[in-house]
Image 1 (cartoon, helix red, strand yellow):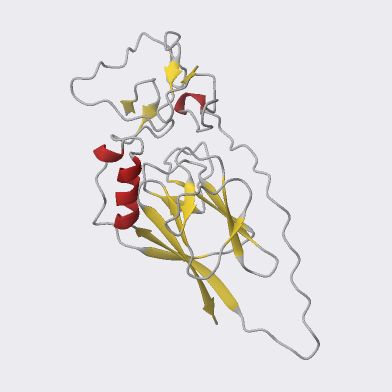
Image 2 (cartoon, helix red, strand yellow):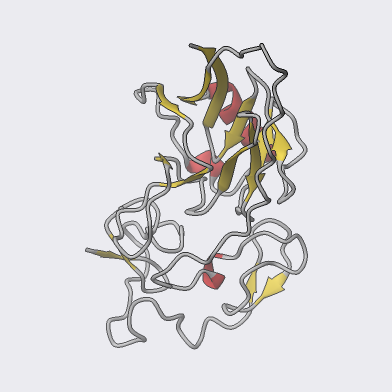
Length: 235
């Protein structure tokens, strides 16, 4: 078991499972076992600086007051995921008598998108230039089911519920974004206050907590290199 710079135990050697900090490498100061127990911020951390806008904050602040990004020190080691308020499901349209509709399913094809990764490097995202693009990762496809599907970083910890769409991308938050089914069977996407944001179709405007409707062929970008290609399939 490894220990991150603020004392969290982690099974990953690159980024902490709990707070997402870069794990120490050879030459870094080792974690002090006589200090506070794992999961608690050391008392001498004092004022920290936001990695996005350089605004000062304390370990107790969950979000930066300057830019609104989620602070790693503000992510406590809670054992239960906080509830997410989802918008009401829209009622399906009423069909006219004597008509029938073709059944459809919606899928998401998850790919490691090199073009999106290059845009992240241009934005000079956090730790972007220290990341290695995973050329070996194969695309995979899943069917969108249920009323909602959470997009999040794969987390080996049993203390929190796994996301329906788990991603091996260090730029993805544990609770990054949510896909929501509409009453007519189409889907929307909303961001859950992630640190690095969610964008669509190579755009620069971030998705917020107001859901954005998705069309067949839309591309949802999250993390450092992950793109979800949304497809409608008639069956």
